[in-house]
Image (tube, rainbow, N blue to C red; front, side):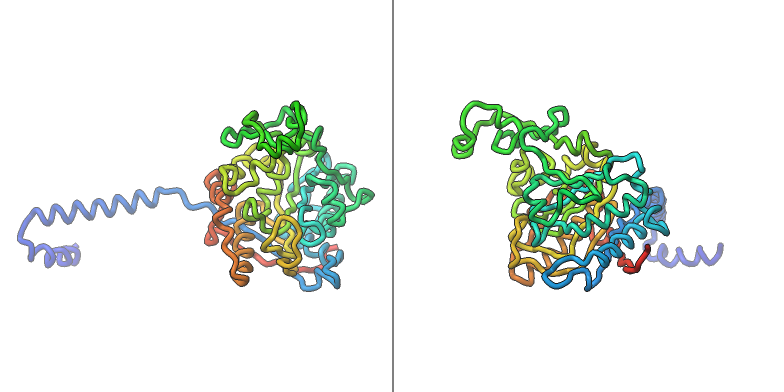
Length: 374
């Protein structure tokens, strides 16, 4: 077209050379080719969705959770997460009546900052409503003493409560290898099979005898699906005591090896989570943030615990953990405490392994209404 020729000629006229025209066309071709190449790139994955419910009445006097409010929060979260109109249909998206469903809680914060029993009760009621019998629901954590201190009861009719037997509770056929972290220490299931005293081994720092870590039998043999229910707590070992840590550190016999953020075990956590025994069984993560403990964790420390009245839910464990890091760091900043991000390198490693998305720009936080659905 004539108008197109007029656009080009003034630019060419000042350069007086056919070579400039060729160079211009060559560059235009590169730009055009780049545009075509970019158009052929696959689109970025959709943003991860992290749903949250918040209600100021979720905690009553004495910081006890309000069962009715918590039930509404959990019901609303699961219906929005599953995009289903009823609680039964929502849970049925993730489990079947034939599943043995494990609810992995975090009780190390006990009654101060551990997973609230009321949150677990609400989940169990929803599972039962979807057709899972109570006898097929197992609530567990490492220490039964912590579970009881957090308020869980052995006689709860909604589920079976259990800890992990330190001697017989680990599956010798379900192991993950960590060659860099090869010290056999107290807490390893094979430790007690050695000659000598546990105390003397602890004091002498032990020998480099094993690089094997064994998963808990409850995870490898008992349950077919898991609802991961950590609490939003910091950890001096791993930065946060979130979804990835809840399913790895507290399900391995030699957890101390993986729970030291200054060692290679920190970045190794996501690799452990990527094991099919973990990743393929976890249906979703529902993080209890009714209370946030932002320092002194994972043990209870009421001086650094604040009421937050919130529960989060997502099928992306990396996105929910990254959200927890940002919230905890905001609280730490207000108290002039250092960031926990350096101890959370495993979150970015998890994103690289395809476990989820850690970037705030790739995470969509969605607040849900809290209304009665029953």
